[in-house]
Amino acid sequence: MTREELTATLKEIMGPYVQDQAAFEAAQEDTHLMNDLKINSQHLVDIILDVEDAFDIEIDDEAAEKMMTVGAAVDIIQALI
Image 1: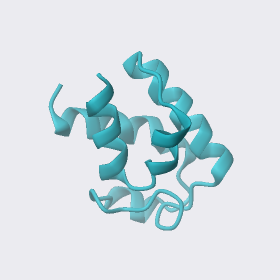
Image 2: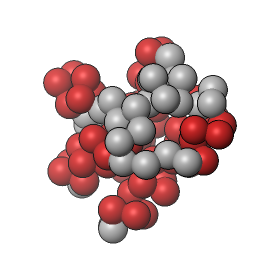
Image 3: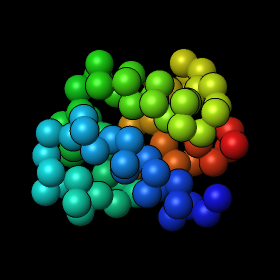
């Protein structure tokens, strides 16, 4: 799976949880999930669980804490698949 495909799938998963749609549509690798997209911490946990299901991976707590930007999340997913 290419980085672009991973990013597209991640964005599909994040979509329902995003509070700032304009920022979401313009999201880049350095877009911060909580600060820029206004995703709260509980929804971030939901996104991580959805990512685990979608990619059939397990994200440990240490990796989850690093999933703060779109690019970091894609890096972690890419490393685990």
